[in-house]
Every structure is written in structure tokens, then in C-alpha cells.
Image (cartoon, rainbow over all chains, first blue to last red):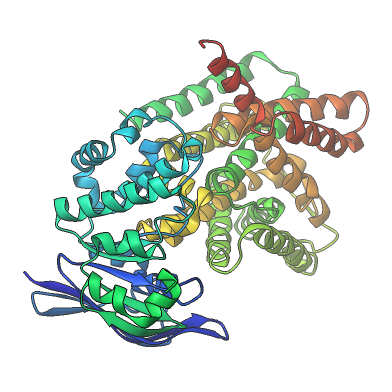
Length: 243
Length: 314
């Protein structure tokens, strides 16, 4: 039953620019792990590599389910979604001209998820009642916070076991950041999800995190075994806490 | 149920068109209606890729002419029946569409459009230098003297085009009312997000380009018989690209009805202008109307109507 997501020595980039220089990390089932790092250190690129949107030049990424290893490198995003991994992309990336409900149903495009789409839709509306109220409204007309909720709910529609979340706090008011992060935690507990979240808001992210990694210039410079340990590291103090 | 409704509409449209040919005998109307209907097919086909999926194709003429020249080859080599020409024209143009679909892997937005425009130029040059189909001088397609059930071959061509128009509208309707339509809309709105959710973007795009290309090729296949003398300049006319893009924009790209409305209005206006003033005016009409719509009604006539309706109950 135990499953984990393993990233081993991944090297990746865009054309001539190398972004990741051998990143390794592991996320165990049921954990909430955060990726800390300021802009341009490779957090999004790493998540895109896991999702199959960027192909690593070297290294391994695999899921281990019941001791069986399943490589993700070389697979298409569709196949990776089928394996139970979904990404909530940075900047929400909704379908602005489609309704809230259509956005959600697109989250359940894969066959496995489609079968339970009605049930999952009901769950999503329970978790985010505001989306139920606005189900016929165009996604582009929602407020920033509502859009982020929709982006998370849409990812949930694919019934993932591993949820990758890329900077959910971008562009949100401080009060909403707290709210959204709390909802990520709620979802994680409710569905037994395994969460890997890239985030810059240290205080909010560590509130829900079990562990974390600090990424600087495409390398993991520190691995915090607990949220408290993260706060004590010098780099984190320097970059995030202003100490 | 779902398949039956559009199928019934196709059969009804063809029967109605046939009945019309037994009543109206003035050939001019069939010539004019053929051209308008041909634009219904082209505009609907364009909209499957341009409107639903968001990839603007400037190479309608390439697909249309490929259908027409496939027909010429079949006609010259085997004296094939029109139905065979239509199916083969659709198949060959559909293959070209499939190729264009792979282009979308590397080219997006305006770069994709430029590539499709270039495709039309390259294909035209190839045909101009292919003597078997007449090269730059062209080819005379002699119509069969008789056709069963019809007194006049032009009336027959008109009914064939009614069939193709009804068929392509049904295809568009079916796409809109299916998961495929929602997947294509996701690609149009945000391709990367669609990919993140496991929407098989490449497969859907290939399906859209192939279908769109095939329908355009089918519209082109009866063209040699219609015009009787076909040469590259007329088969690859820029009018096809401009019209098939402008018509859905004027009608509204969001629904299958848009290209139909746009093609009927603009196509008819062009026919009237051709008779009363000059066919030279046609592109000017399109240009002026298109500019007006982009400024005043960017969502086309249907968008305008919808906004009216939404405002009323409030």
C-alpha cells in the first residue's frame, strides 16, 4: 500500500539554459512536502518535469507503489495523470471562456476519473460551496481567490493520489492566502492525498507542511525534516524571515 | 437518439433540395446557391479548427484545391464517379490536415497561420508544374451529359453541395455536443492547462485538423465539374482563405450556427454584388464587413444576439 514519489538527480532546462542541476527528493504517501525557493530557482521546472511537461536531460523520476517502480520520465502528461499525479499550475491557468462546471468537468477528462465525475463534482462543491453558487458563471469572471479554488478543485476532479501545487498564493490577498493554504490541508486530510507544494510564503506553507526542501539555483541546499527545522536553517532565515 | 437528429436533418435537407430542383428550373439560382453552400462547408470546416480549437488556418485554399485536383486526377485517369471524387478528395485533404496537425506541436498562434499560408503557396507551385493535371494552363472537366433523376447537371451539383453542407454542419454540431468539443475548447483557452489535466491535446488537435481538412477537400472535389475549366489560380484563390475565416467571425465562432449565418449572409451579398456590380467587389465587401465586426461585434452576430437576450430578463 505504501507509495512514494522519488526524484533522483534530475537535470533539466530550456534549450541552452540549464535550470535544475541534479535535484533529488522523495515524497512519501500521505505527506505534505513543501518546496521553498525564491523566483527562478527551479521550483516550477521541477514540478513540470514530474508532470511530463518538461523532459529532464538526465536523472530519474518514478512512482513506487507497493514496491513496484513506475518511471515517469518519457511518459506523456496524459499517462502521468492516469497514474494519479495532477498539477495545479502556477497562475491558475483556468479556461476563462468556459463555465465553472465545464472547467471542473475538464479535470475529469481521463476515463478513470470520468466514471466518478458526478460524485467528485459533488465533493468539490461541498469543499468549495462558492463554486456551486457560480457553476454556470464563466471562470474568467471569478475573483482571484475563487479562481484559485477552482484551479485546485479542477485538479481534484482527476482523482489524484499525488497532488502537485505550484505557488497557490501568487496574486492573492494575504487573508486569502491563509484560506487557500488551509483548504489544501483540508483536502489532503480528507482524501488522503500526498501533496508536493511549491511556495514562497514561508509562514503559510510551513503551517501545513510535514517536511520541506529549499531549492537554490537548481539545487537542493537544505532538507528540513520538520517545519520547525526549516525555520532554523540559516538560508531560510536570510531569505524568508529577514533575520 | 443523439446521432439520429443530425442524420434526420441531413436527409431532410437533401430531400428538400431535390424537390426544389423539380420546381425551379432557372440554372442561375443553382450556380449562386452552389457557391454559397460551398462557403457554408468551408466556413464550418475552418471553424472546427479556428473557432473551436483556436488555431487560425490561412490555407483553406490549399485543402480546397487539393480536393479539386484529386478529383481531376481521378477524372482523367479513371473517369471516376462524382461520389468517389468527393470521398477521395476528402481523404487526401484529410491526410494533409493530419500533417498540419503535427505542425501544431511546434508552431502556435500567428506562426501556425503563416505556415498554413505558405503551404498553400507551395502546393500551388507544385500543381502549376504538374503537367498531368494541366499545369498552369489548366484542365477542362467535361461534365457527364446526363445524371439519373436530374434534368440538369448543375442542379445535381447543387444537391451534392447541400448534402456536404448539411454533413459538415452535423459534424460541427456533434463536436459541440460532445466531450471532444469541450476538450478542443480547453486547448483554445489554455493548451498548457489542458495538458496538465490529462486532456490528450495532440490527439484532439490531430482530429480537428484532419476533420477540418477533409471537409474542405470534400467541398473542393465537385469544383472541376462546377467550373468546367480548372486552373491553379482559381482553385487556389485567396478568396477561399479570406472568406472561410471571415464568415465564422461574422456569424460567431462559438457555435455551429455562426459559420452558417456568416456564410449565407456574406456569400449571398457577394453573389448579389457579382451580378449587379462586379465580382471584383467581393473581397472589398469582406474586408469592410470584417473590420466593422471586429470593432463592433467581436463575438459575431450570434454573440450580439446572445448579449441582447441576457440583458432583457434583468
